[in-house]
Length: 417
Image (cartoon, rainbow, N blue to C red; front, side):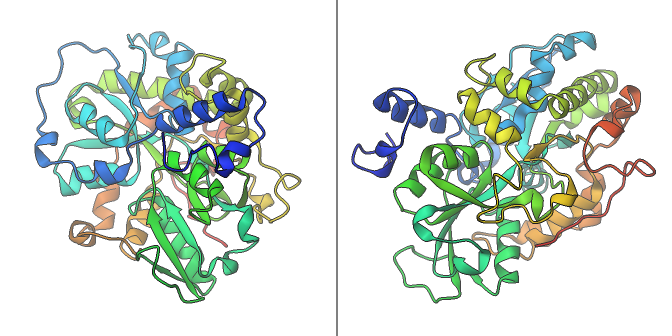
């Protein structure tokens, strides 16, 4: 049991619609479904990346973490899109941590996965592993949740607070630190027991499953993370949304679709069919969020261990009326959703996130990152061919968010606080 889930803490007093004892247990099981985290992943030994020979067959083998970021892959499987493309696809394998997912991919147990965007950057340029981004798994889908005990209603009020992020090399850490600096605050990384100046915000790494119970127990004051842990924090831990990240960085990427170089270079027809199915999955998820939420949940095909009401909130609850106090949506004119699905991997976003990582406070050795030529990375790390072909084939550019139909493969990054 997690350290924040003892019977006498605040989590035990949450108003569940089912048996309270069972509710706590199920919440912990939900949380454990994504235990692991990038801290372990980033410390994998180099031998974990010794690539064996490719399997002889062409079966699609999906590995995924049970979060909404994996929706496009899971919908493609659940709707039979791989089979319609002439491919055999095994049932997706649920992996309970980023580290074993990376290891499984490196060992060629999986040939199609979703990774947080910094993972393939690290794999390819720090560990020389031939991984290729072939699309975006989703856009938006993250937020900053604060505890009600804090009384916080704006970034400027986070001074002196303890805030958790899922990992230093993440979109979440980048956006948070940019917002803090804009508010005149200084992000720091230090022991939680040390005193903070009024303008300092102490950051710490915390696995996403631990964030809602830690917030409920007042061990932290806020956290920034991907769904469905924001929805879980609101529903199960009494948290409130301070700001959606998609309302700060318009249609930003978070998780990306990844394949092996060998496949994208040597099995082009197969890779194209795979991305055809993934693109169809992404578009279906964009157009049918309520249906997809039920499909993914415990009450549906059980791809995710979360109940349908939490998954539904994570995918659809995004309105001025719901999030007016505090004002978590300052740019309603942007027309973004709580989570959206545009699979095209815009080079401008890759450049933005790698450039900003170089300016973001992290721990550990960042020499590999600082030496990267960002323009080179945008061309070397990403394959744009298969996803573009698929979007052209199915005529779906106008069905996803953030597309200039006059020039659909290019965009300008919009970051406004």
